[in-house]
Length: 138
Image (cartoon, rainbow, N blue to C red; front, side, top):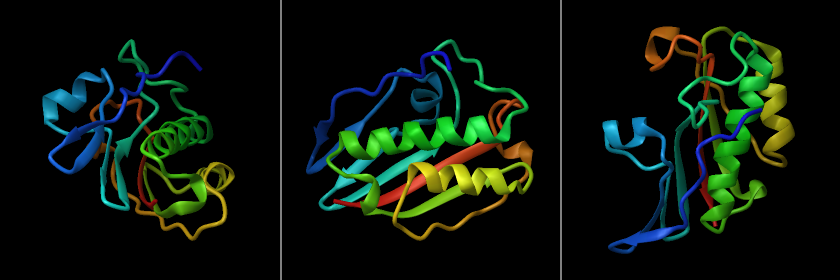
């Protein structure tokens, strides 16, 4: 996979730590990749979007799921969390595919996960098939 948007170092906003990337969608829509407030970490919807603004692995559900989970988990870890602390992992997918859940399970281990399925129209790029959101406790 090509380089995804690099995560910034955590920085405080009031009593909250946030992480951003150079992904233009974050600033366009006004959100952060991940936010830590006290012992809680929330990772925004994460896809396999690359730093050149293309989607990695077009038409490959499994590879997009793995990339999105890896990016989301990296954000949790950068804010002081770890994969066993992940409380919920939500996956928005264009189609239900068993390998998406299996890939999430290979990256986020030892926890229960839920899946949410939405229509493809909800993604900002037509090549996006999977979006992952993670909540974690530190």
